[in-house]
Image 1 (cartoon, rainbow, N blue to C red):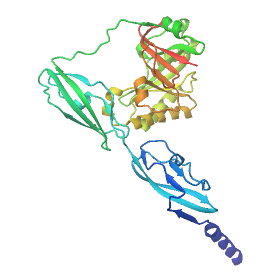
Image 2 (image 1 turned 45 degrees about the horizontal axis):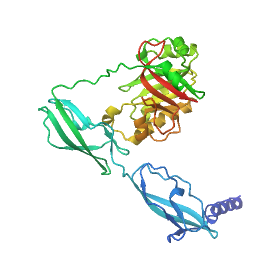
Image 3 (image 1 turned 180 degrees about the vertical axis):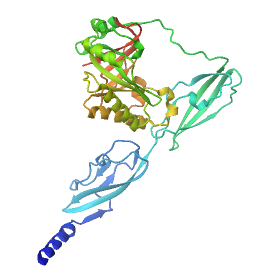
Image 4 (image 1 turned 45 degrees about the vertical axis):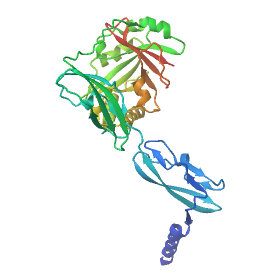
Length: 391
């Protein structure tokens, strides 16, 4: 028995030590080097993307692993390879940096009422790819107690000291009139149908409680084949079902219309996005959909107050869409042309484009195009959004 134990111990020692191949450290840079040592934060890279292989006789065994670019600072790199039946490791370092300055995404002519007492930094809307805490400094002569026009200089800086300078025209007025849409122009569904209905398109609408009671049979008879409807609303972190959702989905399906839903979100964390996705799934209660569940985040005018980065909002949307996909539904992102081009990253999900124009010049891919919000269709008393879906 002692003899058997001895043999087992010797075997274990050999397996743990004796069978390991020696790894030599390559410090010459004769076989390998890096093409770049400074990498932009959040850049999607594998080691293979930055390897400079100088000798074709070596065999790389670790070239496809991802480089973690989510945090700034120095990152150690190890590349394992074989050459002439020997194992080597090449060690180096890369620096993850943020070189992208803050982005301003609002107009730069602003009006305030005399004796305005709020933070002038929040007159414009700005954000950053990496940090949610952009510093704002304002220079220039102005007097909020006197009516007049003043030239201000805004200096915006992120945590990496990247800077954006913006000239802002400030108008101090006796009274600031609220902006109202006085346009009486309407977009008629039949006109959109005649112009855009093709073999590969369908024409539909999207609705919420603002459309009130809808006669979906008349909507169907007008030529619509699908309807996207608001399922839920995120209001001050309180989730609620759209007042007309249950009635809308029941009546739209009975009329033979294809149905998809959207969640109006103001989520500022991935945890909130998960809760909202679960809220949508629970509200549907296994209800089948013909079209996707849409993540609709559009509170850009209040962006300064959220203290999140552009990367954060992309992660939030991705979290929501992944969860609904895991539950067997198709996910979709809704946004306007400007934000799709400047803030949203490329997703592995279809896009619902909002662009109120006769002919969109958006170059990205999209599944649905919301082309107006002043539409008129039989079955709805008032304005409605009209959409084109591409099959």
